Amino acid sequence: MLEQKAGFEALSYIEADLYYFDFGYSSKMLSSIIDGNGKMGKNSVPVAYFLGFENLKQEMETNWKLFKTKIIDYTYRSLGEMFSTPHISYFYAPESEMAGAISGILMLYLADQTKPVIGFSVGKDETKVSSRGTRKLVSRGLNLSLVMRDASAAVGGSGGGHDIAAGAVIPKGKEIQFLETAEKIIETQIGKVQAKAR
Image (cartoon, rainbow, N blue to C red; front, side, top):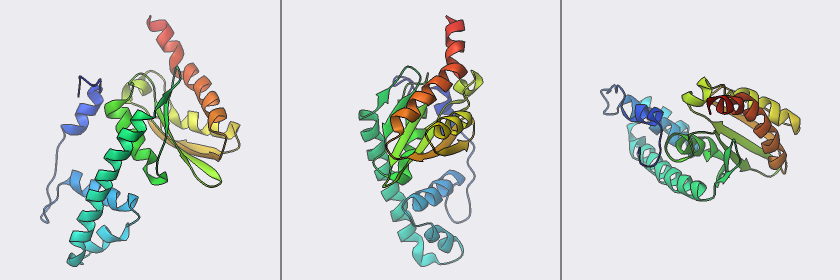
């Protein structure tokens, strides 16, 4: 992982305390199963299983495995089609519900660690935007909640979230204008810190 320039933050996701439940899943697996089913549009399957409908176990695990296969494929596709500006790495997600997950994986393990990742999910009338940073970037001044809020407002959309992970919805076709505004905001947040560090 270090050879592919993943940050130390990524290692902390691998090395962590795990709790195991009587029904055979760890806390990490449980979270992943629920999230994977949700991303596959099958939110109710794990809920029903954990409420006692044991006949849904195979469907729940199959959905989870399909999600993992899809996310790996989509992540590597997005990595191969990633664009870069001086302060942002960005991509267009192959599927709308996957932009956030892809952004997170790219930011932690595969993308340039010196700038945040933004993923666009272009729909019929609007574009969903997902952004991810690292704790190191946040400590240098990055606040993606402000970036998403202000850049989306500048193009007639809305957004917000957390300093390390945020999202927005903007009108379709406004992605480049959004990026131009986001670039300026991120430069004021972390660009000056980079200049001082030299």
